[in-house]
Image (cartoon, rainbow, N blue to C red):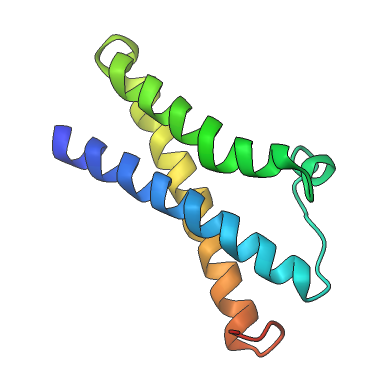
Length: 103
């Protein structure tokens, strides 16, 4: 069980980094940010701080208290990993359909 949880944390962290770069890439090609929480910080230093500093720090904090928060943490991780998986599939579909160039 512990290995699966560790893999979920790793997958979420990696997807978060990919999301940061993919978001910047698709924004450069005319798309808009669909997340109403992140949209106001696009183009500011806060976008980098949230995606590359705060989210990984939050993941590390959850990792440290995972034994105390138990099942709800695992459920939240699976939901988050599923959402990120869907988002990564969306980015791949955009690029595969030629709507966003790979370079």
